[in-house]
Structures are given as C-alpha cells and as structure tokens.
Length: 71
Image (cartoon, rainbow, N blue to C red; front, side):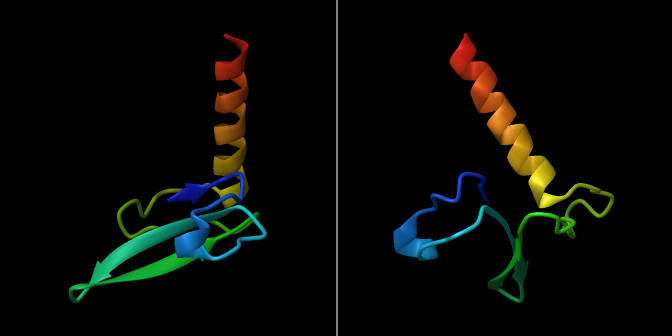
C-alpha cells in the first residue's frame, strides 16, 4: 500500500503525518506489516532485488498525477 500524499484511510491508519509505504507479508496465517518512509530503502521478500527508497516511489506517484492533470 502506498500513501504518497499522507492522506491514508484514517479509520484504519490513524492520522499519518508522513507519507509511508506498508508492505504486508503472510507469516504463519497472519499478516505482518513493515512500514517505510522518506529515505528508507524498501525491502520486500517478494522482490529481493528491489533497490528503491520510499521517496523515489512517492515522487513517481506525484509525477504521474501531475502528467495526468496536464492532459
């Protein structure tokens, strides 16, 4: 889940103050969450060679939204 504008579903996430990425992994029938912010390097068991920071993903989302608004 990517909350690049730090809006979040407040009912479920509380009141986030920073954009964050949440990665959920199923471990023994239960999901465990790891959250990444700003310059944190994303670590995912599904994509072990992934080499990006949370900020790079947020910026890509903002750039895409900006280009969609111009069309």
